[in-house]
Amino acid sequence: MPSEVQRRPGRALVVAAALVIGGTAASAQEQPNGIDASNFRAIGKARTCIDAKDIGNMIPAGDHALLFNITGNVWLRNDVGDNCRLLRQDVMPNWQKGIYLNNRNPDKICGGDRFTVIDNTTIAWIGQCELGRFTPVAVP
Image 1 (cartoon, rainbow, N blue to C red):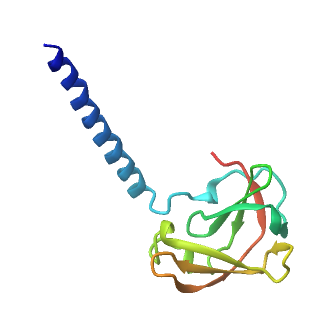
Image 2: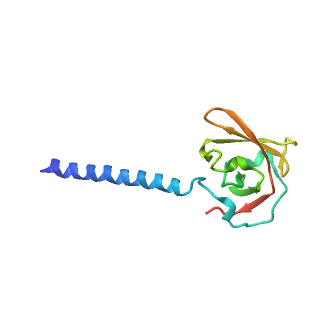
Image 3: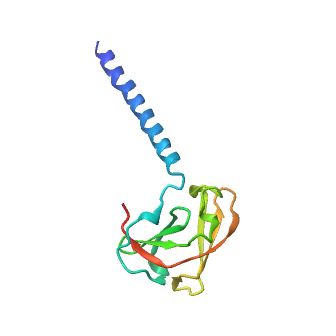
């Protein structure tokens, strides 16, 4: 009898894990680009430049923006606008994109500087786009 009790929670755990995994896949399909930063609330004035040494992380955030995490856990949205088709999901999924900055000043990243989009699976250069202004945002 004790062995029956031990088997049932194991099966339930497998079923629960399958539901969680399936739920995660469905969520990813509903939001193909993962994060859409265009709706994030601005919490400060937009800046033209940020210090290059302060950048901790940078991720594609929708079809028209990049998110930068800088020192102090501050998030900045960089709106690249409609001119950068490379961020669009129909070009390549965001998990596959590598973003490399091509700043003119080694100490600062500024609007007008370019960034290169790389396909991380093939290491192929896809193209370049231009950065916009950096707006501090509240990340949900």
